[in-house]
Image (cartoon, rainbow, N blue to C red; front, side, top):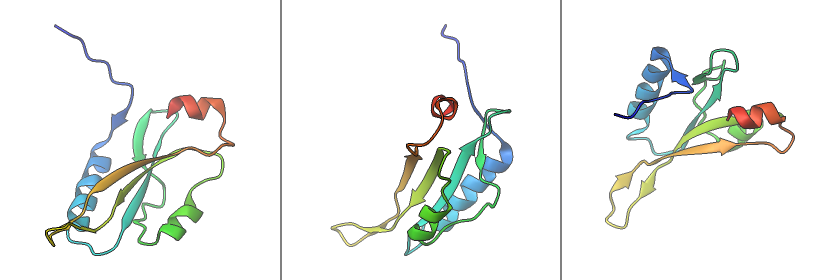
Length: 107
């Protein structure tokens, strides 16, 4: 029997927010994104303090910190060759060049 070890946790409010984000983006006609971070003390993956859902990618780029890594969950509408609308999700790993070694290892 194999043992399981988990380094990070995801709280119930974060799971609920992810669920709401998934449901709200399923029929969206424009890209949407949410920024997530890892809390250094609790090792919890959670949404950033503002809790904003970004609809403009330029605004999202301006909000990302210059010296700290982040995860960005992005959903974007895609029309398939069959004409059907699909809204896939992409998890982006943002790592600025000026980030310190501790934060690089944490993410």
